[in-house]
Length: 387
Image (cartoon, rainbow, N blue to C red; front, side, top):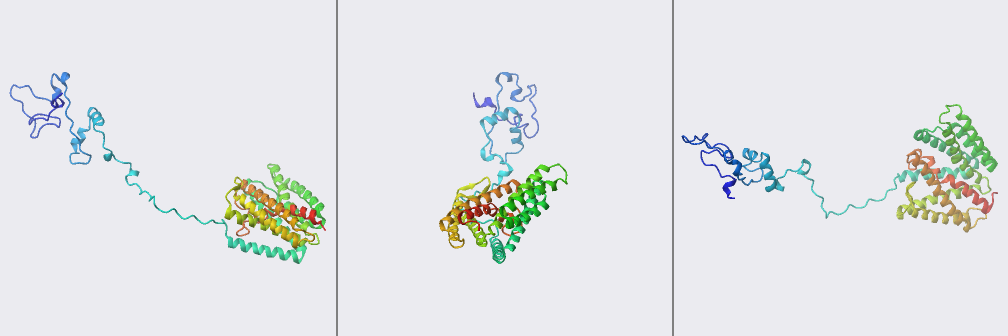
């Protein structure tokens, strides 16, 4: 097929693809058949020439005006153009968000320096509050035993207030505070005066008082309220009673001091070793910050401190007893910390209170002390007796 079969450029005075020639429509010669487009000829159904589609310059050139619009219109020519003259990639319009992309970061930029580990609390405030509490406890412990019993009772009442407040706020559990506070303080005093028997009797009476007190309100939620109340009575004042029972021995202040020192040393060893060397999580679902390395540090520090305390502070104590005592304290303190972490995770809170800057609340300091108290009391009774 020759080039002319696709349509030739029109001559002067002849209508072509781009429309009539300049100067107006051409006048046909006298007697001649009026000329028309090639596709209007009678034999168009046999030859039907296709016009030559000129090569298009890239979009945006001087020729890309009305003619370009006409040249790209029509389904037949559009299909031909799409098939044989695809749109050049550089001429395609990018989406608005990609027209001015952000510059790519330099692959050779140095990686940011690793951030220094943070304790997550105000350490200066925590140390100051800890030292202040230590002074108050030691002073009351060695000045007069009854004064230290009063310190235990105050800590129990505040702890019960924090626990019941969080239960009410987060779970709508209304454990009655008044019978818990009165019964808890009485429980501590009964344990100091009458020993284990007095503590058990006070515990039973406190539970009964919780049941009766709650009867004055609506029956709705009664079971969960009294259950939480009995749990709170056992968890805070009853376990704290064993500290008062340690105090009744002839070397009672030194036993209590050993109990406090071993618990604090265990927590300190866990924190120091875990913060520096911690890699493997101990219980990630309960307390993601605790590690196995921290537990090892707690055991090591507590066993060393236990050997020293039993050898030099406790009458008739020996160093090997201190090793066993330190091991038991590390285990019970860790379990107590995890137990309260479980409670706080269920409540959806970080701390039980804000009373102690850098520490949280009273319950956040009693979490490891409370379950450790009966363990130390029992082992000391086994090792050196209760007198």
